[in-house]
Image (cartoon, rainbow, N blue to C red; front, side):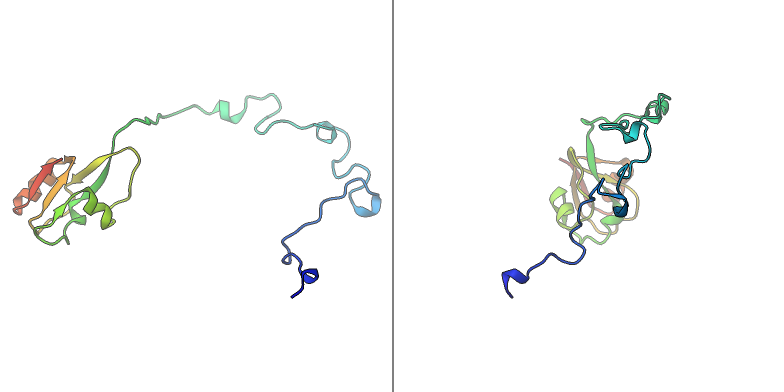
Length: 148
């Protein structure tokens, strides 16, 4: 391989449009801009979303909703996800993240355990919050639900 034989990969480069270079080029005379009008002028055209003076769509459609960026969000884990955990295991935030039982969330305030599903093994669960049904189900099989 020699440096004088190197060339870009096929299709990776494009030659620029040579505007106003005669009728044979296909881009002569008006240079692909048509005849007269706002779009044919230098610096012509309108901003994105402009509808000719009509009330634009982004102002016609009503605004809805609110996103509180300081809202507390929890990592949610259901009892059905903990059914295969061996007896005597301590399930806490680190255990949940290490075993990929749920996805991480922003502004995380800890773990919240919900009562969907059945639990068969006595485990210790350390979380920031428990639903009433989750707490009852954990204690029913002999486990403990500790609020951290």
